[in-house]
Image (cartoon, rainbow, N blue to C red; front, side, top):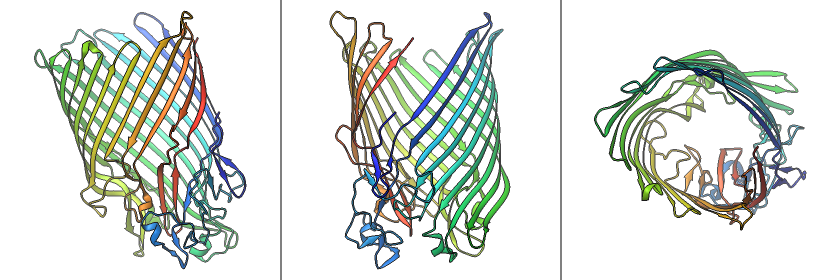
Length: 540
């Protein structure tokens, strides 16, 4: 449970409220010396209200189809010179109040979702190896409202009704200690289904775009089935006293079947189909890894490895203006080269890890502009070109005493698109510098046997672009620091733990996302302000 921290100034509806419950049951059964079974079921539901984005006054009041200069420069103005598409002016920058709460739909900003699932894992000890069977199933249902215009009208109010389920089965053989090297071999199969209806309530925008009078909505309705099968092998071979070689291969075949499209649902003309497809796409891939490890001492490991992974092709499932917008796109591939070390010092009280990495990202998937059948450019998800990523990372942990632990982690990254229409742009959501750390102190409380603890943790993120192909500086998030504190007590038997916590200690105002829906609007998603609470854990 958690209280709301945001309010619609027009309706008084409070948003950002947490109302979640979940449960899990696990049974680990040693049937015999050779066979054990792990049985698990879980489920939960969410019945809270969604936080809503904040409108940026982005359109020129004299011509609302043009972006105003202040928005292009990333400045916030509230003097009426910048509005949204239909002339609404957001009066302030306060993240606690918004101008909309999904008014096009009677359910408002609620989030009603639930899910359940389970799995069975069997381990059977055979001669010199173990046979493992892992079976899983999960189901998820969602009904969720999102105000995507940030104002009381109906420019872009959204409603999602989803149903998803997934089944997976893995069989693998694992070597025991009698072999001269370690190996794992296996087969994998999965099937998942997504059935989605996304509705856009837009009585104040679609009539302008189409000339069709209100009431009018856009519905995106589709179903997608995905089947994936793979075979894999992984080995770790000692080469000499301090050297070892690791390697692996995975062959994957995946097929996606997609049917659906976009329809205008109108009160005057009835249902008007815009785009539809009934298609499938298959992806085949051979991925793998090869690496070399060197241990000059028991406290130091040096390593380097080269690996290749992929992400399957698929379908652009957003609102479509024509059937051309629903064409499938191909897979993306990532080649990764990494070299680093893991060191243990002060008899294990201190660890220092570091690495350098390089990624060659080929045919990566992103939103780009393509021409449809009549020569009109539309923004769709597709293969956008190639990119490269280079970075350095380090992690330091020190147990200063039996009471005090400290940690510091840092990362520097340079990521840029090298080909395609996005060439030269920095990749989205990749801050150049990030830093995090914590200090945790534990102590006994007199002769009671109880224990006390206190922790301070912090994080830093440099400036970041939230989107590729951005048109304004409002799609860039400034650098920020966050700090959190937590303190509490634990009973002597460690069964009960009570803690008070405070998040965003300094009440930092920071962006977590931004959306450019030009010429409609620009929306900012702000991080939560300073919040506090209590948690209680009981173990039996």
